[in-house]
Amino acid sequence: MYVVIFVTAADVREAQKIADKLIQARLVACANIIDNVKSVFWWEGKPDSAKEALLIMKSKKSRLAKIIKAVKSLHSYEVPEIIALPIISGDKKYLRWLDESLG
Image 1 (cartoon, rainbow, N blue to C red):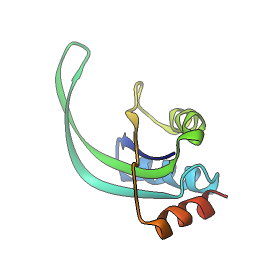
Image 2: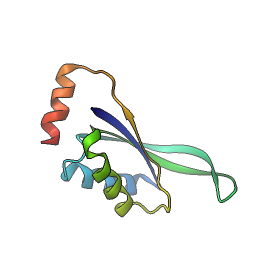
Image 3: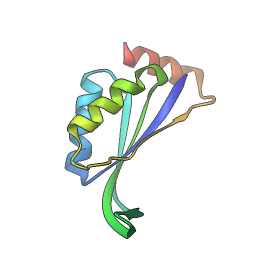
Image 4: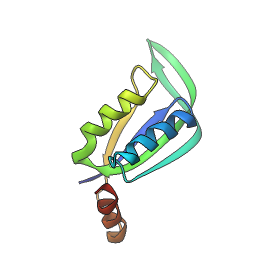
């Protein structure tokens, strides 16, 4: 099963560092970085907000445990957002490319 993984980071530099390591380790096939994301959330019992960068990465569910471990080791947050959603369908050529990219 293929998955899309969302990770918010403190800034583009941190997001790039995470993306580079996960791509080099072939844990993800692709990482998109979106800068200047406004996040609003609960933290330590009260509403908070932050300007962040969002990573959108594509991989396989079978690699998710290693991805989570790697992100936690590289991330500056105490509780980083790391969530995965299933890819229920997609272009066959793109999915084949995902397989080839992941080795």
